[in-house]
Length: 330
Image 1 (cartoon, rainbow, N blue to C red):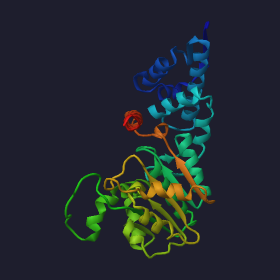
Image 2 (cartoon, one colour):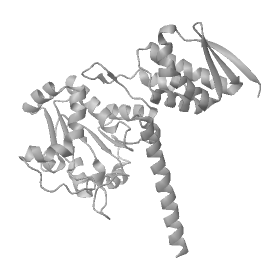
Image 3 (tube, rainbow, N blue to C red):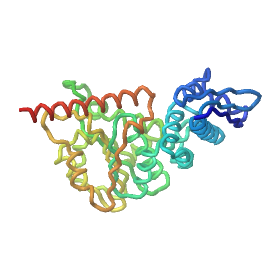
Image 4 (spheres, rainbow, N blue to C red):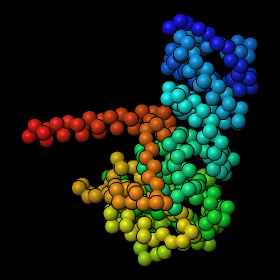
């Protein structure tokens, strides 16, 4: 391929946001796409092979548009913009950015950051029950919480109910001190963290005292019928099939349910079936229920988390192939 160069305009006030600290984002684009980028007098020159230059131009235009809309560009934005351009879907990021769910207490906008997250949020809006299944860092719980708080503030539901099974993550914590609330709080802490960030501690406590927001272990759901509520079951991979059936049959009129979990991080006893795995097989063809499978591409934490998740996925696939090979030989 012949070498070529193009010049694009990036407004001076957005240049530092798009380029990153110490030009870190530009260096990543240069290294990944094998181009050279030079900024001079308000113009940005891209040099390299024609196809690579075209991709770099599309990436920079996406990032510039995001910056002009008031977004702070992150490394995750850069990585995802590059991956979308490789997939031929360079408009995907700009479409996602239009979907504002709500703002945090500090005024930070909460939006889906990947196409997988966008499908997940759309499913929650559209369906009565949504399963969000994927690895750590894909925003399953956080986005569901944002949707729940938005529905509550808009009076679409009269209360929010957040629940998760109280199971230790591979450890035995023994007897915990304090009253019942003190004993279950460590298991529910991730839900509190998201609530405080989006709603604020004061607002949460006030609504909690009125019974409008409830955070409780899954065992407390038995025998209840939950009408006109937004219900989130977190860490559903740690439910038993019986618990999951019990939970799904609590749903009443006017309610919306989100079930989140990561099938690769079960804390159940060895050999025990996961209620999440069973439920997905049982209900996947029922109308008004959608199963959204998020992947390592949808991880929006530190880029290193995405690499760790991907490395574990490859390791587990390799282990599965090896165990199958051993069984065939025997």
